Image (cartoon, rainbow, N blue to C red; front, side):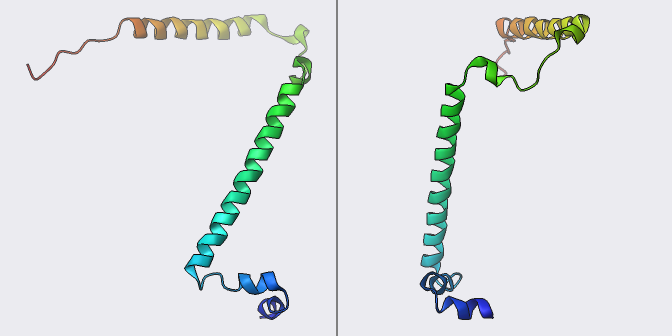
Length: 104
């Protein structure tokens, strides 16, 4: 194996040769990798949050909308459908079903 003979010359590679042989070393590698990936995710999330916060509303439109080609009737059907669902769900929340206790 040429990889392991090369690892004897490079200090980091010789340490990685212990993977799978020493459980403490394996867990330390896992913890370090997890910490590194967590830090990368946090930095990426913060940078994305700051980028979104610094943009104005006009730059968030990804697809240009041609208002002349919009079908108003189908849009009204969709809006009516969701308004009906809202009325049904609100009615269910207000008129919750009362169950009789079967142990009585």
